[in-house]
Length: 68
Image (cartoon, rainbow, N blue to C red; front, side, top):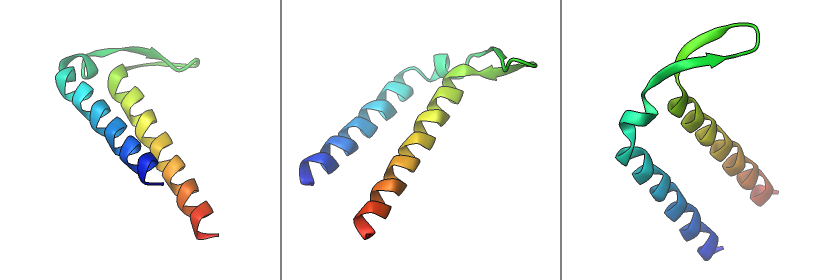
């Protein structure tokens, strides 16, 4: 359990460092097709948001399984 926690924190810190070093690229606006429409949005921020959402879902499922 201890190794997994340290590994998860290390991965989060590495992603945060990567984003900090490349913030200009993450915030560059581009056209994104949604199939039925196109929007102008920062693709890097969308990908970062998807990463955060998947992390929250993973942590919530882990907490649920641990409380059972």
